[in-house]
Length: 275
View 1 (cartoon, helix red, strand yellow):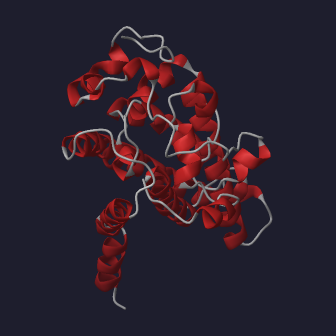
View 2 (tube, rainbow, N blue to C red; view 1 turned 120 degrees about the vertical axis):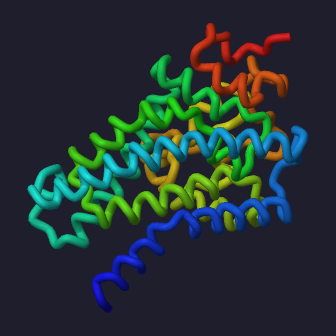
């Protein structure tokens, strides 16, 4: 293969088309086999989520992506970072970097709920009154912007190579779309799958309008971290639970403009219902 052919092939591999195709496939599947009944008017709700997602992905593609890739190339070239210092073959170092990236995303997710400033931004994701694949994209652009230093620290301190970063990013995006989806899987199969991966029923519990349930199932990829930290639960019934945050129970509070302004307004007592 010539250098121009290699570059074209690499460009195809890095194209967003496979991710978009995967998102479309999940959206079709969840409509054919739904886990929860929808409560909001469609397609208006999904279009709002996709618009918020487009703004967030703009930050990811123009800032987070280039920063992370540049740092990944540097840590390999200079042999910096925890994983790069280990006397292991490259594939073994990449496997450890993958696990470390996934675990530190678990930590970041916990912080977005526990640190008031981060919660102001993450709240935009949680006030969605339904939960499906479009919710996976419903993040405030400022939330993505504030996560850039965390992603940079992940790559630089862990010593994540470009290859490990690409594999983890692909896995992470697919996992986030999958576990936010409204896809009904055979319950016995899903309970077994939840020992390894974050699943729709599992993450649905995290999105319920009850704080004690929301403070569980923090994993975004491998469910291993919830099992290790005793934050795993699969004892609530997703079809019966209410999705969202109690203080934002009206559709007008979850609209596009309201969601964009939400982090900059006076905060409510999120877990108390406002009439």
